[in-house]
Image (spheres, rainbow, N blue to C red):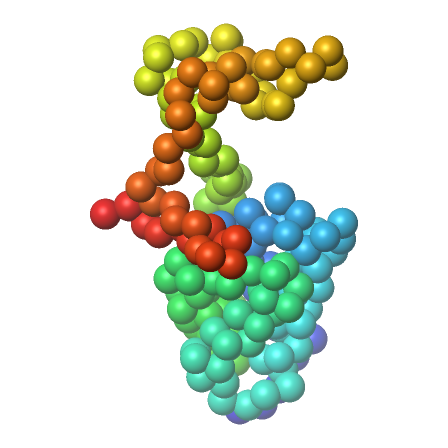
Length: 191
C-alpha cells in the first residue's frame, strides 16, 4: 500500500499514543520509574518508535508488532510483559494502522476518542503486596491508624510497631511467594 500522508501519519501517531497511554503495563512502568528517571520520556519515545516501525516496514503481522513492543518494554523498562495484554495492544495498533492506510480516518478518530475517555476514567495503580508482618497485624485486628512502617528500630534503637509485631508473631510465608536458592522471589498467581 501507499505510504501514509503526513496528516494521516500524525493521526496514526495520535492513535499509537492513545493505545499506549491506556495500557496498564506501560502506565505502571512509567508511574513506578521502571525506566529510570526518564521513564515518561521513554514512553513518549516509544510512541514515535512504534509509529516509525510501521512506516519503515510493509505488511507487518501482529506477532511482529508484539515482539517489537515486548523488546521495547524489556530494553527500556526492564519489564517482561506476560499478563496477556501484549497481543491486544499489538492487535489494536495494527488495526488502527490498516484503517489509516484505507483512509477510514473517522473510525480511527472515534477509537482515539474512546481511548481518551477510558484514560480519563482512571489509571491503573500498582498496589504493594502485604508483608507477612502486616498480614499478622491484620490478624490481630489492629486499625490502619495504628500501623506504621516496618523498621528495625527507631532513632533510639527501640522497635517500631512492625518490628514488635514480628517479635510476637513468627514470620510466615504467603502462599503465593516462594524464595528460590539464588535469592530471587518467585511470585505466582493465586488460584
